[in-house]
Image: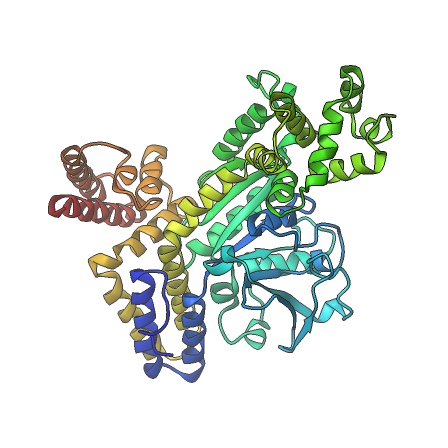
Length: 512
């Protein structure tokens, strides 16, 4: 298939694809094979890894994102493996072995990945799950083993995927393409619970630094504060005793702690999101909740005091039914449902499911996935591909080949339409701390590079074109001056990029 016939996320990806195609006849067979892999990845959907500590609720979030309870959430063989969920015309699971062989296995009767694969797991590289799911047409979701797990092999698999594992002498034997450049995820949703731990910060820093060490790379991470319903409101100042408000305030604090490693931290009740979004909430569940709503106030209050009392206290709703509700919704979700039924006793099962979904916080997470990842997929993928090309050239033993690749990249980046890649590179270097900037200037670099909307890039959303035009020129002049006076050499390189970004915005606004 020719470059023109393949589908690219946008003009930046198409430009990098043309660069790869043009270079293939000019480089070694090994490098050409690497460029072919870069082209394949470039035309594929954005690769988003869901990562975090063990038992943080990663697989539950994956199920909610996909809208199907397919990723195993109980500890077992499959939770020790990387699983890639991608679009396919037929639902199937393939075991990919370390020697390259593949073996198909059926989904379980409940639609999930089998808990027991029936193979030696130590010989397995990862799983490929193909689903006829519209969500996966432009987003491949990757479930990862937990960081912090006692299983060293599981942690190593996750670190390889994120590009945080140091390269070894065996890497070339395992993959002809640089492992950290091509095999790594292009974006990450990082899951935390309660407080951010030191190893959470280290993992995120390593992921960002792996990107920053390349030719280009965007800030391509958001974090989710999962299990928000378990946060004790009294532990969060100004929460007014409200669980969701406490979770939102804690997420804001964590966002300040993790920035600029992540674009945002969003509160989520993953279990509630999974149940409501994946079809696990049934009309029978709605009827059981209506039965609970009809109980006398004293019994209801007693049931909701704890999980043990909810399943063991005597009442008209069978204990087994209550256990199922608790497993699907936890006490917070049950309280939300009862509140909705109290307000509208005739509420339908569908409306109740939507109310639970609203209470989970999933809508905000999906919105940020759209604004941070999908809207910038072209830039993210183009930057990752350019990083792969650079890494391949650096491993070549041919100085002439390295120079040809370098020159081709410079020609590409000199074009005004490709300057966004320079901006993404600058943004990543600042975010990773590779170039230190004063806080206000670092925030400005992040703002200019983190949006495709001119008003948001300038920090003046909704303002009149004349005001935006004048401000863009003012900031272009300021950054040009800063690059010559007062900036360190590293800061000066960033300043040149930001100056040109403002200048191109100014030109765009004037011609528009």
